[in-house]
Amino acid sequence: MHQPSLSHLSATDPDLAALVEAEATRQHDKIRLIASENYVSPAVLEATGSVLTNKYSEGYPGKRYYEGQQLVDPIEELAQERARTLFGVPHANVQPYSGSPANLAVYLAFMKPGDTFMSLELAHGGHLTHGSPVSITGKWLRPVHYGVGRQTGRVDMDEVRDIARKESPKVIFCGGTAIPRTIDFPAFAEIARETGAVLAADIAHIAGLVAGGAHPSPAGYADVITTTTHKTLRGPRGAMILTTEEHATAIDKAIFPGLQGGPHNHTTAAIAVALKEAAEPGFRDYARRIVANAGALATALTERGFDLVSGGTDNHLILIDLTNRGIGGKPAAKALDLAGIELNFNTVPFDPRKPWNPSGMRLGTAAITTRGLTEEHMASVAEWIDRAVTAAEDRPALDRIAAEIQDLLNGFPMPGWSAAR
Ligand SMILES: *Cc1c(COP(=O)(O)O)cnc(C)c1O
Image (cartoon, rainbow, N blue to C red; front, side, top):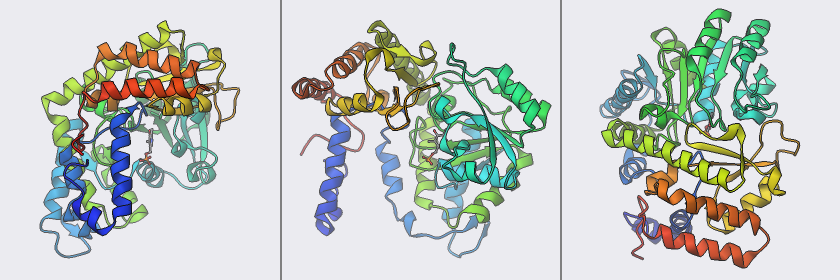
């Protein structure tokens, strides 16, 4: 059951409590490979569930529009200071409600409607908020995109430079949601400087790796860094924007009053806790183990004939092109879910199929590494994936895999949940 137990919730709203308990059990029983997910610590859960949710505090520490900020101010300052120290940046805004509004703040701070910006094509690993036609960022601004090479599966920095010279974008975004390789921040910074663009590094996926020293940092290269706090960083659902001194005021004004009202103080507190955890030596080890697990899983999948975009991974993330397996991403992901392995179907670069049933699936190792799985387990994970994709129509075969997985996971406690029912 949930730890601590949901006694008040169960008394007040047993229907809802039962759903939450069932979700906790589901999280316990599955190999969670969704690349953007994790398991937060009990301390982060406690801060998220605290009375700070009761407080309104529009503005920033020392400049609030409501009274009673004696304790909220030091909480937000603590989060800011920990973010600055951990990432080595002069300024941190910890108020964005999530990654998408954090990116909107970048556009609001530096651009006018119709202005041009550059980013990684969504189908090549970008994010909706990097100018997708269905996003406000694609409707109200003018995105131009760079992509990855058909053969390499990697961003071609010469192409980035050529497009930037031709288009003179106001902002260049680097980063995305399905990039299995190291982002070359110095090269992006050089191109941004040459073309007069603001460089925004969206490190939502890799923030925990950056904090833990397992991916190069954009600090000192990017003008602004946006990140969620709930992916590899292993904090509550939220976001931060880290900036140079020069851009601090523009970003702060864009978040409040530009886009948001009162900050979510319970989230701010939980971000502070997550940042403290991420500054501990054990987190460097965690970041290293995430990458080691992804590398071992990539090797094991390749040995089983899976075709990995870019041929492997440098970080937490693997993108599989299922074309050679004769199955679409969606039926494969659905079969895996029945088999106790949770991931998402995903487009692959130059995907001939449509986004609602694309050719690929995306997986990441942040959550299973938190759970305690190590490199030695990755051969089994690859075997289960292989068996489930092969037996996608065979429900009893999928059930057998799910049972084997539950057996393994029973030996790895889940933060915030205990098998004592
Ligand atoms: C997850 C993600 C976001 C958006 O975060 P939300 O919290 O889902 O709004 C933005 N950019 C990138 C690169 C992401 O991976």
